[in-house]
Image (tube, rainbow, N blue to C red):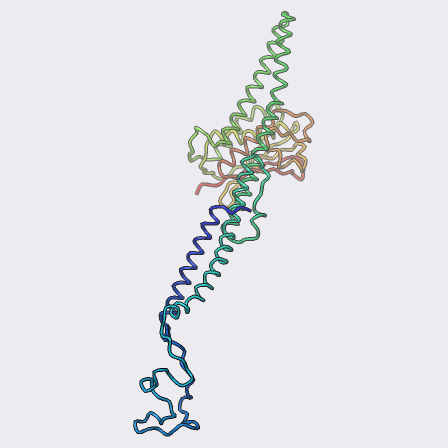
Length: 392
């Protein structure tokens, strides 16, 4: 495995630091040693011991007899008996002492620097390989397992990389599915438009009938493109509407009044359960459209004579809004997917619309820092929960 430049930078830096430390410590020890440059002393009598056999009594000056120990200035030029001449502190004698700590420190520095440089550079090298694989389109690349069981910032960086790669993989999957669904939804009205144009040429007497079909399909395509543009702007976070302080209760009331005509046409009753003012920081038109999509979806799936209940109450730090209908509900496995673009639950025998309304609702609520979810009512029907942060 080829070592990168970061490895060698770490290696040289740690090695140099350890070597300088070893040289400094060895030099200080060598310079502070009291016997630096001197030969080791010969055997001497223990402290306080008397004259041994053959040793004469102390002389008149108190330094012992002829056989006793003599002070350095009384010893013969050749040194004590049985010892050769003192070589003195020659050059080799002075340099020999620090060589061992220097050599040991250098070896330890090389080993320690190599291990430490490998420890730091290996996860960074794994991250680089992960980025290269991700750039080549391998969105399933993960590096946390390759980095190993570490408990430091580099391990956290690996986990962040995995979360980023998973998010990119999800977004790319959604984008591909969205393109597929858009092409599928546009293919049918475009085919009908082409067929209507051909029939208008072959049967001019039915031009009015075919023209009505062309207008109807054109309006459906225009609605689809409009919702796609709205969803795209919400994904990009681009909105020309400014954030303002508003009363969510008034938004819900206005939205309910707009949907009253449609509810009467479906023989559906709307019930509001609102009590206190609901101050909120948000975009009025976006919230109005998000709530309206949920309410219209509930009206559409309610039976004749059914009731749709819109309620709101305050929880710690947030407003909780619920829209409940008395329709057939949704399969349990589809509850999390009904907010995906173009998704239609299998519980609806006659799919209507394009499946973008609840997707737009989720984007709007999430852009305001909230959450949206759905659940089936025990008595039958679907209830959609919208949680929005309350104004502090």
